[in-house]
Amino acid sequence: MACDDCDRCRALGYRFCIKCGQDFSASAPVPPYRVEKESSGMDLLHKSVLPSMALIMVLAVVSAIILIFNAGVTVDFLSTYKSNLSLYFIDVFVLTTITDTALQVFFVLVATAAIASVIVLLYDSRDAFRIGSYDYLENTRKTSAYWVGLLLGSVLVVELIVNFLMTLVGYAPETPEWILEMTLPEAIFSFTKAAVWEEIAFRVMFMGVPMMVIAFCFRQNGLRHLFGGTGVTKVGIVLTVISALLFAYAHVDGWGLWKMFPTVFGGLMFGYLYMRFGLHACIVAHLVNDYATVWLQVFGGFGSLMFIGLLFLGVVCIPILVKKTLDGIRGCKDLPLTGFDKVQDSMDSNTD
Image (cartoon, rainbow, N blue to C red; front, side, top):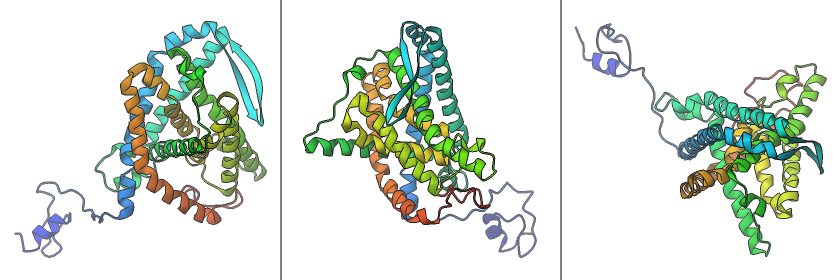
């Protein structure tokens, strides 16, 4: 027999009434009790990232689909094309020039890596699809998709602001003719190669390899550090800055000196994603960043709208980017030096 407290206990999600002991299991199922948190200013800032995150996941999938459906025509195009495979350090070191079948095989490899990176990012970020779940926002904030959504759009806006300031002082940035004249197969090859190979040449070579060597020096398994995703450390931040500067300088040859100033922000973004989530997150962010030209060729004016939408949502993300950057600078002193010199919780170097 129900008492006065039964309805209250049932509403709270109790399985029994705490007063009379009434068993609620035979009645309609009751959702687990959850404490609703009042929305704070920080909650609103974090929620402002969600549209950007959603758009970038869509753009990543669209870019992968374009790559898949145009793989055949791109492979055919590469039969009469040649491309240098280079490493960068102050100057460009051409490892080899690839042509014919070797170039076609190389494209298949980088295309596979790009598509696989999109799949891995979506799988790692599966909490972002559980809309309405308990602690949805808190769980989503830990995903790579959230951080790509936060960083990519807002960093693109920062880069445009830098370009605008350079224009005001009399140095007008210009897009090189070779980019404007690209055919679709050439653009797909060039930007897919850039998304994968440049992340290997800058993030793996200048961040992963040094961290692997340091790990071996501390008698740890260094191979797991080669592809990033092992956390933010003081040494990692130094390597991120070095990698970003080299990454920016490498763009001077094809674009001009002006390109170095905005590009360094992109290098810092890729470095953070590499430290925190791994190589696949960098590749996806790089792919979406570079594929704007491809969207324009495939979708025409709608491709431009996709990019404009990314920039608009990037503006919305600027406040939390600024806050996270300032918090990160203040928290640098508390980061581990290498992460190898002492036993630590695996989450210590992966905080916001």
